[in-house]
Structures are given as C-alpha cells and as structure tokens.
Image 1: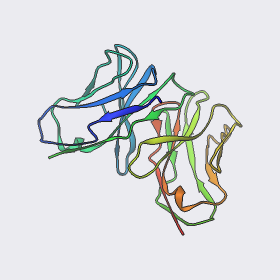
Image 2: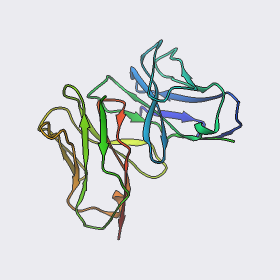
Image 3: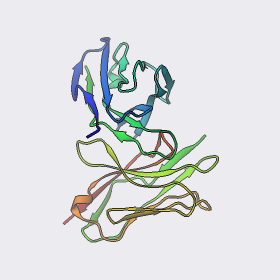
Length: 113
Length: 107
C-alpha cells in the first residue's frame, strides 16, 4: 500500500544545531507540503513543492529550507535550530492542487533545548 | 487575504448529542472545501470534502454543505460517539487550514 512516512518520529536537539527531518511518500504525488502544529495556531504551512526542483515558501518559512531532488522525498532542514521551532511537524502530499485531498504523515515531534 | 475561520474549542458533548462545528472562509473564486480529523498521536486524515457550491460531503455520519451565499462549510453529526473524540480541521484548497476544534465526547 502507498504511504507517507516521516523520520525520526521524535527528536531532541540543541539550539544552534542543524536538523533535517525526512519525509518520504510512495503515492507518486506531485505535491508535497510541510506544516508545523502548535497549540493555539493550528496547522501552519512552512514550505511546499509542486514537483521536482520546485520549492515555495509558506507563511512561516523563516529558519527552514527544503529541496526536492526526486518525486518521493521532501526533507525539511532547520539551518540553526531555535527554541521557537519546538513543535510537531507534519509532512503531506497530494496528487494535484485544489480539489485533491492531502495525505499526511504521522508527524515528528521536535524539541529544541 | 484568503483565510479559514472555525469555531474555537474545546467542545465537550455527551454521547448521542448533536454536533455542529462552524467554519467560514474568505476567498476569491470557488475553492474546494475539506474537513480533516486528527486522532490522538496521529496525522490528519480526510473526513469529507465538497468541490462546488451546494455540494454535500458526508462520511461516518458527518455531513457538511458548501454554502456559497454564506461562505460556510459547517460540520454536523446527529449523534456523536466517544470514538469521535478528536481534533477537527476545516480547510480550503490545499494549504489553508483553520485552527482546529478539539471535540471530547463523554459516555
């Protein structure tokens, strides 16, 4: 069965370190998304991609970067982790835009000390 | 800009009670509208969707009707169960989500 996976599921790191969160989907979807979920803020879009070599900034992209070298993967990098980036991160994918549902990964809980 | 506003929670109901979670949107054009559900410790999953005005999405006893005149997509269920306890998100097109409403159903 097709799926979307995230790793690691839990991560503790220190302020200033570079961290990369992995996202891998086997749906062969063109679109991939990264969100963070925080109490009181719901789901906020960090970055998204509509295909290989395409990346776009979302509403909370500062301090994060992504690259899309193939269809299956969209890793999220925190260049220099900050305590404000402690959150739960979700990756999602969809076949097209607009009317298509998004399929979500199980999430990565990141703690920055 | 475009946005989604949903009823703030948390919402606590007794089993078999009627549920309404309000959702309104501001957007140009005619977006597709979605309700997602997040069970504890999991990612979001699609509950239902509607792609054009007057469409009704339904799944697992939940319903929502796309109302263009009131720019709304309210979620309803006639009789909730303990297993419906979760966080519910309204969304439109891809990428725009409401803040989420936590529902707790007590036996």
